Length: 399
Image 1 (cartoon, one colour):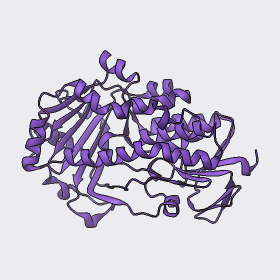
Image 2: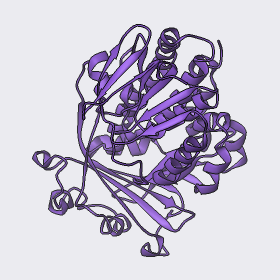
Image 3: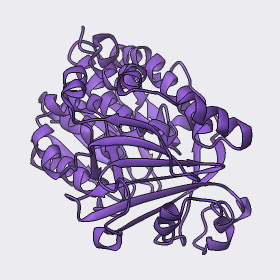
Image 4: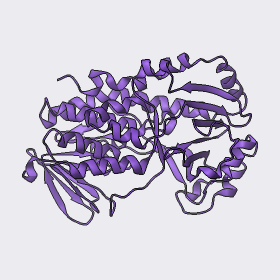
């Protein structure tokens, strides 16, 4: 196919590759432009809710994803200082399965990325170019042209910008600023053998909510690895993303933590940290033959572990809409259909983020308010997320 009939996708992450595969399976020509020097197996663990499997079913990858996944029994919230369980959401029971149909899984990001990458490489019509950082684009009416940082240009029928939180395409379409949270994240993966046999809930997804910090952990690669993410209110903002040791920065933050949590934190690699930010919701992220997707369009905090989920839902939606509309109308409809769901995700993630990190009396009130909470209470709260991807209005299933 000619370049003018090829859809350009900026970004070879989970959203970009899911979109490329979904479009290729419709017989379309797709060219993925990835800024990294190679699309390699990188990253840590991610959580995938049942909503993403609606898309994986459509692109015939559910079986492969489940084969490399771990299946926690529960998603648990624990008070970081007392060790008391505040919320316990079973995700393997018959009640859960009847309500949500698909599993809740945790996977190594590299493993699922490789599944998508292999599928794209085998799919007719998908081309992948690395070391291609898209810094500008032009909508020329009947096609688009993008320019990379090294001066190369590529032309195509349309541009789907899945280039993440710091999207260059967004600068032209939306032109807003990042919204820093004042928190930073540290990520570590250790061998499961490093975790004490009597450590509580090491087979579940557990979030320890503490005053000004939280820690999430869960198993990976069939229980052989243990993924830990520690998030702290930034005690040294002048350090930014520097590769420095932050042990002194954060030690006082968890001084009163439960002993079991302190043992986990002692395993953390604190040399690298990630500054956490999102953006304000916007109603529209398309213009002509150009559209944003995933974090480029609607970056969310990690409160519901749905960043990847929203991008993968986007992929299914945009592919379905392109079966019924031309590029401009499909992108406009995509923006319209996804805006409210993703905006709600962005805003609720901000509220839940504060909920996790409550301090003082507010923490006491939070904990008291969660007493007696049942699994069904939690299912009702999460229904809009875990079942929302099946809604034809937001998934793009209807023409």
